Image (cartoon, rainbow, N blue to C red):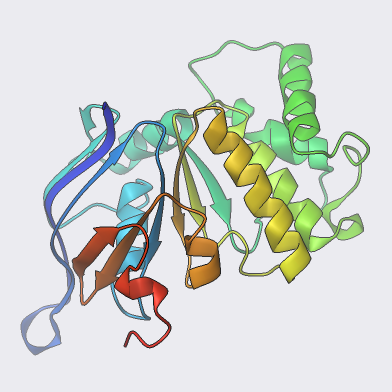
Length: 240
């Protein structure tokens, strides 16, 4: 199956001398197009560093990272920003919506920076409206974030992540700020996206949420501990 993510011997080192920290110590991971995978690990395991690199928010100290067939591990900040806009949709734990903009305006925002599609204002608006309809918010398009529940705000964030039609969706603790009912609703949306072919890589510390993924990538001490479904070590609450 075609790979959308391929990383080889990825290392990330912070500091020097006695203060050196090996946040990633030679990680190798592949994610196939259309896969739904989760990344888990205890605090300080390196999973956040890994996701920052996978999201083109940071660069590795060494190693290779191929995203959708392109080596992005050595790109500069401007090139990484362009790749992020084209290739990756982000969902954050804290939603990251602009408080003074409506749901519709928040979803339209990524299209302002999309230099690869020459969309008219009306085309951008229609696409944003369709994205909000797809997550069940057709009656909340003109509400401000403060007028929406946490689950509804996360739906807006999902619509925003999808509006540029990226091949990869990165979800960082997407249910971390939600109650159990809203968490179930968000995971239902994630499953529907996966069924329609979206590739999803999700970071979570919640075993119940990780079990929604087809594969769990377990990270510990900057290395991959296991990659499996079912009885992954990271799905056991006693991992330290």
